Image 1 (cartoon, rainbow, N blue to C red):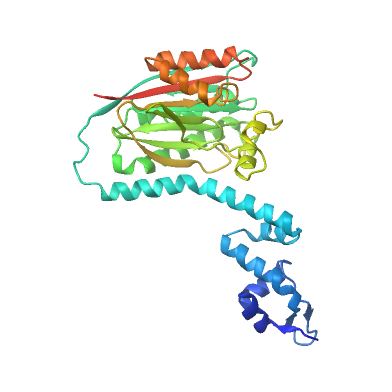
Image 2: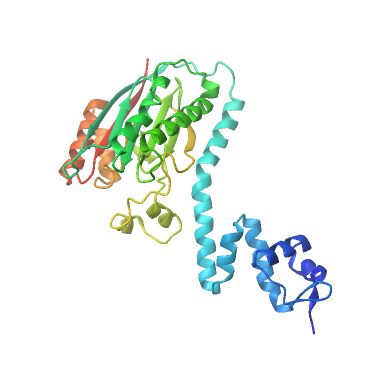
Length: 348
């Protein structure tokens, strides 16, 4: 009594009959009654609200498995989950948004517009810290390549070293500026295979990786894990990477404040590393006077961004900057390995 046919229900909730049959099979939206003779599906009017929710969540791009979880919640809890989901989507797409904007600008750029010849002045420094018995970080700085990797597990040190070593050829090979992202992405695939060879398939071994590749007027970025890259420009400090950690995802979803994250018991838990996820890629236009910092998480864990900015601003050279930053981390307890790479963009 009062049942809607699948066609009428589909029109009312704006889901196709095909989608309704799929959601029935997935136990996401079961019909109220199925005719035993014909197999025809019938729906109750009070199922329309859930069906419309499913339709809207699909328009948001939410995976079916998560929709099932949201639909099982009370309205207030479901609202929090939707807010958290969308916050994560925005965080994950920010890098692609910036890349799209850069590519549009690149395609509209007039040939020969760049006249300034720029180069990098750089320095790298790594220290085991004051607590850890060994250093599992690897830091590298060259005329074209800047990289920091933070290994973990029993084979963490060789893993981070292998990742950076696999990128070293980029420091000497001539690079096509227009194809730099593809070149960097292919090199990272090689680094991933090198780390897999070191870890011998053991999930407990691996490394993060953050690297910048210089093309003469811009920097290509690859990033996965919780090492960081910062840009110091015109007195301001800007983080240009996004941590792939559990606590960062909780911050993105509004479930944790940055202050609470510093004391979270699982603040070091990675969501992605070089062999377990897809790295972020991006491009950054360089200006004379820019100062770039790459660092392992041993620095930001104990040194606030405001202090990092002050030390970068006060150092005359990259060498002075990296040693000041590492010294500051160790003065704050040095609970982890700490590695820093600083590079200045200067007119050649």
